[in-house]
Length: 148
Ligand code: DQA
Image 1 (cartoon, rainbow, N blue to C red):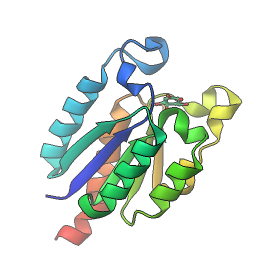
Image 2 (cartoon, rainbow, N blue to C red):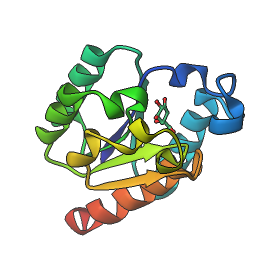
Image 3 (cartoon, helix red, strand yellow):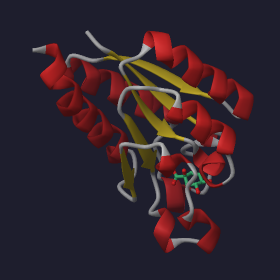
Image 4 (cartoon, rainbow, N blue to C red):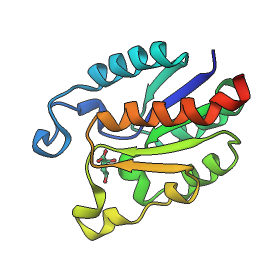
């Protein structure tokens, strides 16, 4: 089964407690459980990570070069600031889906710019945690021609 890294950036460990009117009431553990269940349906092994540290996210993306067929990433605030995460993703050869729980384009102006989008195959935002599951659907479809 292809492995998919599902990566989460800073403050997403507080999901469910942090601004629930924007990010919802589900916890990151709930999102992880949904991703693992969805992965089982789609024939994908899910490796779920969260870090508040930019360098750790960069190193996890480097590991993905050897260990993952695809990446789904919610880089959180690093979306808008991190050339380092963009560069790490540009060195990854498989599909990359960028996910945001909120519709970043309806919010403050600075959230409309994403460095990560420059490395992403596709972007999903504004659909809450469902966005992670849609990202896994997209990844399964993109990988499918190679696995048959
Ligand atoms: C976010 C949007 C970012 O602007 C913000 O910094 C986050 C979460 C989202 O999932 O909507 O931490 O990536």
